[in-house]
Image (cartoon, rainbow, N blue to C red; front, side):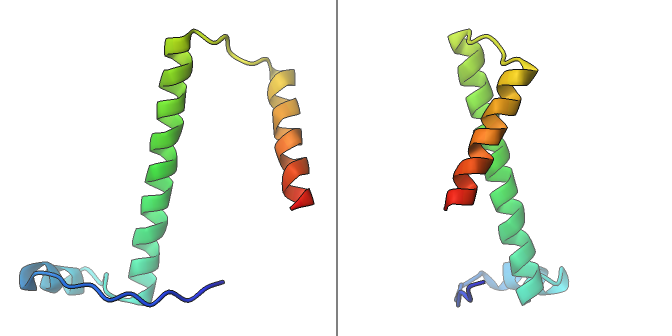
Length: 79
């Protein structure tokens, strides 16, 4: 785990609304960052799906998917 120190400047109204929503806490900021990362991953996945559709790439079979998953897991174990 890493500690990241952040300092941000907000408009008064935004800072007030953030305080009221409980966001300017370590837990609140952590949740915002994690949510942003998930949204970005979803966006990338949808973009990749559109590119595959536009390229008319045929879908993978279940066996091909299982082989890809196994290959990724094997690479992660080596790292």
